[in-house]
Image (cartoon, rainbow, N blue to C red; front, side):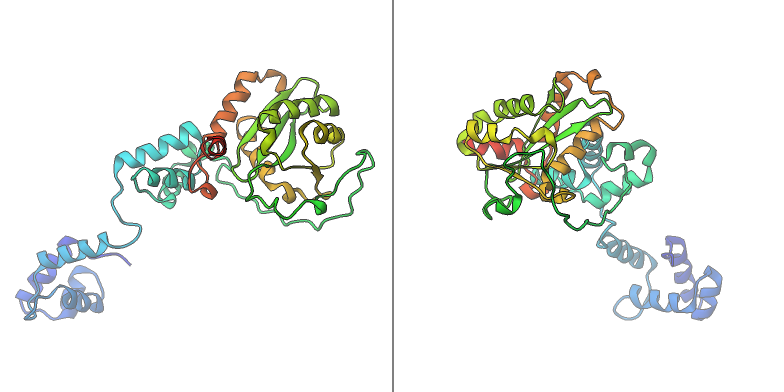
Length: 314
């Protein structure tokens, strides 16, 4: 269905003045008779007279009230697309961030502009506008004979549910040459610490790096959760030095440490698979860390991990 134009409404007005029937008017302007009848009902004044100009104004008012047809401030739209291109925030994060500063634009409006020009904008979305949903695998028996005194995630206290401050998740991002980047995420704020590991996946150098990164926050540490890779075999060193228990997720159950898994996907936007980490400087790693921690999050009411994390130290 298409809406009547200004010219068609004027033709209806002239037809009524000439005493033509509704069917004759409908045939003349190329619409159904019911469309003309409905237009006369909507656009007539109190005594039944039809004024095409009044009818046009009423139609424009109805259209402006329809969701999805509101006028978007061009400056707000420009700012939204600028944030997409320069910071790679999601449309929902952009919408929430701007709303906190009194500028309204829906995430669907931003998506609409991305879809209208995917060659220009889709590459700035971390999913590149391609979506894949994976079915959760059933947990399988965990075999981790390479990790002495391993403590299962099922022994982790229920308070470590992601709402308490001080529960961390730990993982590695590895390239095709087995170079590694350590990734640590605080669960309640999504604050992420990333660092290149010069000695790759070796367990003790990794544990020392974790110790150095988390030592400033020692008094606020409650737990660390990780997977069953042999690179985390030196977990007892962390428990002794930081006084924090380390828990190990079930095999093939990556969702049990979903915060760090999701955070690593964001890192991969900047360091896609195939990247040789030898070519990535520490300055680049720190720049990526700053970008991710300055990214507004829906779970934080579109505040940033950096801001929410350091609120606990004020």
